[in-house]
Image (cartoon, rainbow over all chains, first blue to last red; front, side):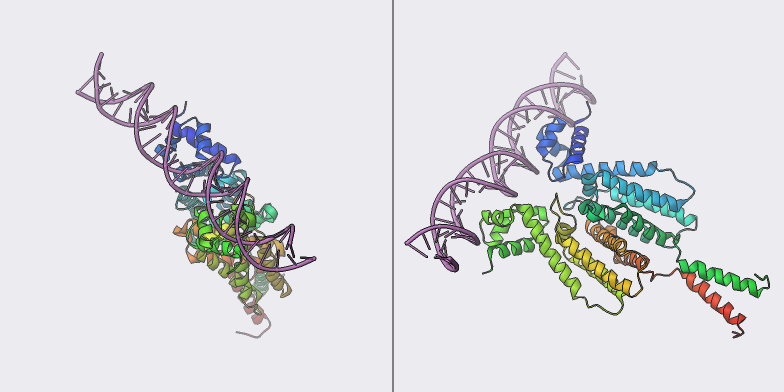
Length: 206
Length: 206
DNA sequence: ACCCGACGTTATCGACGCTAACATGATACG
DNA sequence: CGTATCATGTTAGCGTCGATAACGTCGGGT
């Protein structure tokens, strides 16, 4: 038999899979966890504390699934993989995700800063590979904000914002801007033209 | 004396300026609006209905402030103005904004689709000016999702996501991608080089 | 005159978050 | 071995919440 704290967290997480965080009562949690009501308050202070703990547990799962993604030799592709795993997690755990990223009152799970650090590490790899043209912090804030925005809009207004192409478009746009992967099509034209002219000038002919 | 419905909506909106939507009790609203409790349920069905009505009223204010922005001859600049007014509104009305863009349960204020249409109209103006290189829907969904993401992150995690540069960076990135305003810095270089070479070739000398 | 819809008043219900008071069990230490 | 200690369980209760019932008032329109 797991400890009471674990049973409570487990029960809350289980109930959160179905209902909204507000629709879960402490009595339901106690019944599911087979503990008395005061146990919640001994362990977590109040309901908000419990929910914050659940959110932090969610971040553990969230970050674990990100760390599970192998680091390849293409750090930019890794960024996109991380974005997609983020979006997948959100859609698979809607209530938990909203608890994590739109906390009520002044709860503030600390897992968010771990997510931030993980993202910055991935951006650091891009920088080392010479594939980052924005400051790490700027890029990280922009990427995470955009990713969270896509997910929350998809959860709140599935029609029409749950379309996967919304996530993909924003992913490529924001990551492209940060890494410079994305080229203006005119760049190719101009470069080619310049090269041709240069070739002509230096007598290599066409 | 305004009608009871107006007084209730007004009272709820007033209270929402200070407290979170969940921290507001129907009794507080009734006291502020000088009505009896049953009046809320006669008018709005339940508390959620009232909050949804408040959210829709918030959308009216939100959209009115956007429509107040004059349409200039630069539709891309108009897009950026709209983004900034969106962000400003969110930071000025945090609780109302969260009620509007992260509704609980299955409330879904319909103002969101009006906002979508307004944005699509602005994008249509870009298209007519030949300054849109993404489908209107794709661009609209990406812009609104990113904007909402920036605002919600700033509200939930002001440290460090409330930094105005986050909003500005994402704004220029996403709108730049949609309109093609944003140039790769190498484009200017390549173009200039090509022009110089061309000038040399055609004998105009330096 | 009549009714009917809009609004107000009072009282009440069950569920909720939370707490007090106390009982139990296992473990650590003298 | 005895006992103090701490984690956990049990019961009962407080005050507040969202929501409803029952009833009363007033004004306007056919």
